Every structure is written in structure tokens, then in C-alpha cells.
Length: 289
Length: 349
Image (cartoon, rainbow over all chains, first blue to last red; front, side, top):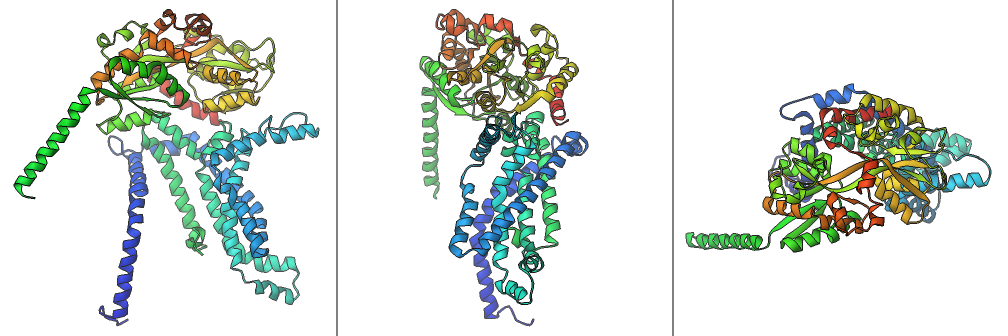
């Protein structure tokens, strides 16, 4: 590389970089002012209260309450991710194999619930799942059950509603990945005598794995921070980490006690992203093609 | 800018500042904060508008469901915007202890000075009362309804699904009454005994509710057969036609109070307003618009509240006598705070 600074093409490129920077700087400033600074300030409070202190973190790592909540949150997130994968993969596969017009229809059905508030959807699930809800009444009408089933106000109801809310985050990355798998590969497999299921398991599935990983990461990470759904459908017993955050503001009357919990959650999310990034480019997870 | 221009600009600026201050003192004003919704509307009609008119002041209103974090940040910033806050009494006390709330000079608040001592604190005056009561479905219990916390705990005699609030305040009191403690002998709470009693009922609790709306929905939809709920929520559900009822027997009488933020911008006017807001007549008007009882018991002597209406209110003397009066002083003491922290581990066990 011997190109001098005065190389016109390089100068041009540099000017373009400068322009790009100028264009994104308003957005960067907004992010800095509205996200980085407040989050940083809250994180600072978790270690500083009338002097430097690790009390808030000592509490998070030694008291049973926190350990139980973190364990439960990871269990729920794992369950939601697996169920969303099992439900979402066939949908994405269907959308991918249908003609364009039909696949748009399938995808819009997936995305449609997005435009309904999470709160409304939580109440809708309540109307379906509770003791006097649609499902229990229908089952009793059919004489399948004599006593109503406990479908909500517990972890089960929380998982069901959370899967519903997070499903699009599984389907869309899967679909995007499947779109990029060349159709000829399947034909090639078939022409070499492989059965459709063999081509699927040996060719299509491995090629779609980046999408699986991307969708699972999205769903898992988003689920870790869920608040409204467990609050409304958990019956008070399903205490996820985000609920501890809000509870700690009330209990300790200072933000530090709450932000310490949030910081630990944030660090676990970053750790997950770091581990995932060893296997797959993060661009994919974050939606870039 | 030349020196002359600067001078002229400065004068104009000073003039403008002077103008705004005169304008402000001509019409005194305060910022009053409550919890919004139907409750704040009822106050506006019954108390706030009449007080503003009588005192010749402007009352700017703001609302927030939970004022505590905002009180902390506002006073912490050194420049609070709010003057008077209507918030659960415990926060007024806690705020007073932490230097966030002004101490009151009761010689300037004669209406409050005339109230019983249990109805005020050095930092606050009771503003309205509500009660945590035992509510039940009349469909499940057409007769022989549960009538005490001991009944609520008796799952053999009163089978059915139950809900309690996901919060120790009032719940520990109920547990102790179920265990035989008299309503007027509760404090200081025997926390160990209360949690032991709660362990007993825990397997039979279907839902631990977190919001008043949720408690109303549970009762309305028949999701539970009995629960602890706030009296106003239960009567609202009953008014809509649901077959539900409640008893004041062994209810836990709770209040919100008025208090003034430390360094409030309009402190003097705020004190005047505080006195006016607990005036017996204004206070008597409140229950005509919402199912809460007046904070000043003298309101029942004004003849504004008809006897049949009075009988429905939590702070009506005969009803109050059946209930336990919550001690916010105990709940904001170290023992109370420790009990609150213990709740979380109880829930997750």
C-alpha cells in the first residue's frame, strides 16, 4: 500500500466517510442522550451510594430470592425459545416454499399480532385460559374435564402468552435465512436419488441453522426481560428478573438496588451475544441480510 | 452587541422577570399531585375546585400512580416542581424521616389540628380512607358467607378459590387476625407468627394479585370465590351487576395523606391549601362522588353525607370500629421494612 494521502480516490472515500458520520451523528447523539447516559447513570448508582459500595451486588449474588428468579427466568426463556422454534420453523418453511403472494400472506399473519398491544394480548389470553375462560368452558361442555384446569396464573400461562408474543422474532430470521438457500441444491439432492426427507435433513436443515441460531438468540434474549406478561398471567408466583427490578425500587427506595439486578441481567445478555458471535456473525442476529 | 444594547436587553429581561413574579403573586398557585383516574376527578369536583375558589388560588394538577420515586428525584434535584402530594400515608412518613417532606406546623392548619391524633403525623394529614376487606362471590356463598379472616383461612368450612394481595401490607394484619389477634392489638406485628399463618393458606391461594384492577377482574369473572380487595373495587364490581359482596368486619383501614415536598416552590400557599382540603364540608363531599371515606371524621357531623351512604363508607365511625386501623408508623419502622423484604422470599418458596 503505497497510495499517498493525496490519492484522489482515497480522498473521495474519506469525504464520503465524513459525510456518513455527519449523517448518522444525530441518531448517535439521541442514542447517547437517551440510552447510554441514563443506563450508565443507573449502572453508576448500583455501585455508588454515599460512597463506593458493592452491597447491591452482594445482595444479588447471595440472597436466594435473586438466584431463584434468575433460574426461573432462564428456564422460562429456554422453554419459550424451544416452543417458538418448534412452532415457527414449519411456518417459516411453509412461507418459503409457497408462491410469493401466499408467502406474503403467511408472513403478514405472523406479523399482524405485532400491532396489538402486549397488554391487550395478555388480557386476551386471560379471557381464554382462566377458570371461567373459553377453553375451560368448552372442555367442560364436552365433558372432557369435570373441574376447570389451572391454565393461567402460573408459569404455564406465562409461557403460552410469551411464545405468542415472541413468535415473529423466530419466524422472520428463519424465513430470511431460508430465502437465501438456493433451490438448486434440493434439486441436486433429488437428482442424485435422495428422498425428500433426506434432502431436508442433509441439505436444507444444516443450511438453515444460522437462521435457527439467530431466531433462538432473539427470542431467548427478549424473553429474559419480559415484564407485563408474567406480571399479569403469572399469578404472583412467577417472579421473573424484570419484576425484581421494579420490586427493588419499592423495597430499597433507591435505584441502585434495582439497577444492580438490571446490570447483572444486561451482562448475561451480552455474554450470550458474545458466545453466539463465536458461531455466527452478529449481523444476522440483528437483522442484517 | 454593544454595551448599550446589552444594557437595554438586560433591562428588558429584568422587566420580564419582574412581570412574571407580579403575575404569580397576584394569583397564588400550587401544584397538587394525586393518583389520577376517577379518584382524582372525584376530588376535583368535591375538594380541589371548591378549595381553589374559596382561597382564590390556582391549583395545577398532576397525576402519577406511584409518587414515591418522583418525590425522591424531585427533592433530590433540589428544585421540586410539586407542592402537595396525595400519597399512601407510609410514603409521607418515610419521606419525612428521609428529609424529603416538610414538617407541618399544625397551628397553621386548624382543621387538621382538630382531627384525632391517629389521623395525622408530624408530616401528613389523612386525606381519605379505604379498606382492605374480605370480599366474596354471592354465587358461591348465597348464605353463610365468610365473615372474618379466620373464615378465609378455614378451607374446609368455606371451600373455594382464594386470592390475596401480593404485598405484605394488610396481608400480614389479616393473617394475624385469622390467628386470633384482636384488631386493636395488632401492632407491633408479630411478623414470624404472621408468616407462619400465611404458609398455612399459601397452597390454597390461586392468585396473588398486584393491581386493584386485577383484583376486581378476578372477582367479576368468578376466577376466585373470595379474596382480599379494596372496598371501592368490590363495590364498583357489584354496581356493574356481579353477585359479589364484602364485609367491613376485620377490614384493614388504610389511608392516603396529604404532605408537602421539602423545598416546595409555593410552601405558604400549600399550607393554606392543606388546611382547606381537610375542611369537614369539602371532605364530606368526596364520598358523594366515589366510594372512599373522608379523611376527616368530622365530615360525618356535617349532614352532607346521608346516613345510608355513611353506612357504606370505610371510615364511618361504626364501620371503623369493626376494623383495624393500619399503623403506617410501624410499617415505615425498621421492623416494617424488614417484613416487606421478607415477603419476596416467602412468595418464591
